[in-house]
Image 1 (cartoon, rainbow, N blue to C red):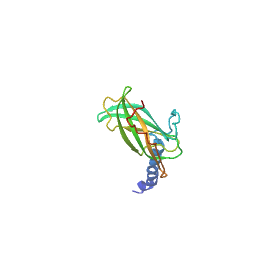
Image 2: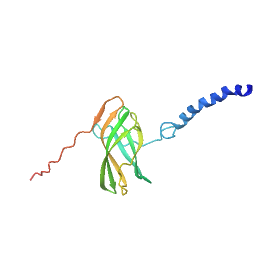
Image 3: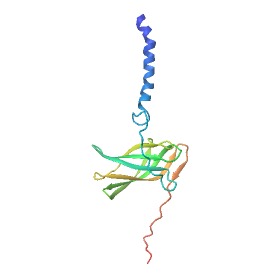
Image 4: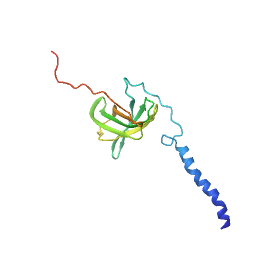
Length: 156
């Protein structure tokens, strides 16, 4: 009994170090200790704060899933973003769908990988995203300008 009590502090110290080792091994991006070198896209036109790039499509048992990479061109961490996703089969747009992304969004001047899977048609081969609104962690936000409505009239 005496011997096992003497080894107890060493055992407790070993267990206390486990979370620290797991945290440093995991890093921020899915087990990577450093961010991989990623080529950033060109800065967006106007004051659009985010760029979303299509990475790949996965076919899963629960349906298609799009892998996207979100780049934050501002200094502000993003809390929530609203996108209009455009689903394509080849060069033809087959559907669009609004998506709200909460969490897993990039901090200032950073990027983050996300997935989209809502209502993606099976024939979809590519997804693009139109950034509609961004809410920052500091409580400020950015909204895309309203598009001009078509009147249906043509000049003659």
